[in-house]
Length: 115
Image (cartoon, rainbow, N blue to C red; front, top):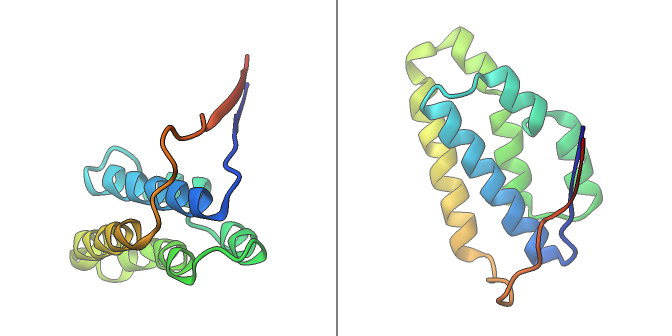
């Protein structure tokens, strides 16, 4: 099964990435997903590299970088994990508030779903 998501303009791409980051962090905070799953989806060096190649906001790249370090925090300072997740969520919200809003109606992100 494949899911194809497309965003075209830089501002739209950055907003979608910030929303995805925020969603993953919220799921982590509520223990709905684990750190490994969040790393698999977004919080990893591959994603950071792709974001850098596309000249995505350094703040969004920094959130991905810090998200990729959550596993280390969990193993070395487990009592600080929730605090770090909350801090990253606040960063995402700050970025979202700074980013220019898209034109309404927004384009549909999900372009295709293949069984």
